[in-house]
Length: 539
Image 1 (cartoon, rainbow, N blue to C red):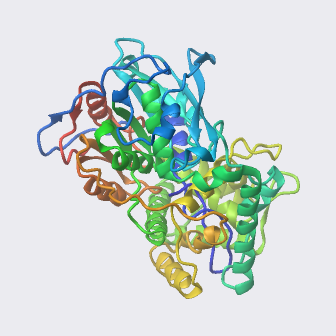
Image 2 (image 1 turned 180 degrees about the vertical axis):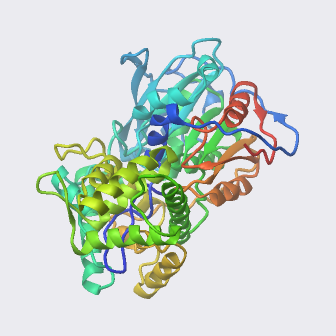
């Protein structure tokens, strides 16, 4: 799904990953909660229904996990993972932390063990169970996200649930995917390639093939088992070790794919699931890229319209003129990278794309884009966009990277699916993208080359993703979400047999915790009382 990345075509290119990422968008949104503007008004359709709570919670990590918490069809060789004792330690701020053992390969218990990092709060009132959270990505840390999530989740929900953040396999503090050193990663994320040429495409693919080889050398067997289905099975293990009969879950962005996959694998274990900013993971990778390119084009158009209504906008003329000026700036960064105030670094087209895209996850960030564009267009100074790109990529001022989100994003994306790499096919897909997203569309093309030389095969697809028999699931979509377009939420709500769609008419990526009281009240009532939002509710 998406973090940010892409590649370029026409006069340039360079990026990474299949599409733009979703995980960090949630972190950025959470950081902007204090600035969120409440939107008023709701419209509704059918009447609400009620689902039962997740079940009685037992002491986590006791040996001899009750049989009612263990999947009936579990391979007996995997039972020790469900029966392990979990040692929770105080890790500050009233939080408890633990590492749990997971199998490297859920299909082969003898393949070895890996570790899953978990951090949780404790319910401040009468406990209903545990609420697992995931910020997206793939590759974003649920442990690091926990504090931000507590700012989004209502006090009433925190009173009723332990809130549990975890780093999925391959991510962060769990057994991580490890690839290049900081210098190598810096070069990978900043270099432009001309994907209009055979040599440019070959160089681009070679860079990512070398990246994959480094991941295999430094990660080992786990690299071949970081797919979403394996992570969903880890989540069921965590559910049982926390003592919950059913899963209660809040997943943002790619976290909706993780939650939906869990529902497909364990429909009888679904308690109360909220999937916010949904990914339509039934789509082929090419269609995902096309849809996301359109989503960011719409968000950029909304930004330009808003910017031109202000006094300090560096863009001139019509909205279309302003969009062309942004495209011209990125093309200039390719032919003649902009100088910056960071010694020895210039703003390439790839970095300019990251710097623009990151601000489109939340309209509260638009003033930062205006400031950065003003520096670039009026003073030929790429420092503003470079800083924004570094923020997106998690790069510090000293050149070190704060996490392995790039590594995990790529590994999970390549594990979950591959797009055709025939040049004629990729060129035709690129032309489709640019036709609907002329400003930055090139940055969403040619992404199939990222996984073309990946050293491990893609995982088998889950046979039935409709989760028949699951309890009601809540899917939330934002009408002008750039990273996970609203159409994806509509599609996922139709795919999951028990889902209802909750809509926020707003800008930016995801809704719960940054939208209005209408969204918050509907989600809280679902978590607290099991009241499912009315089908068709629009906030």
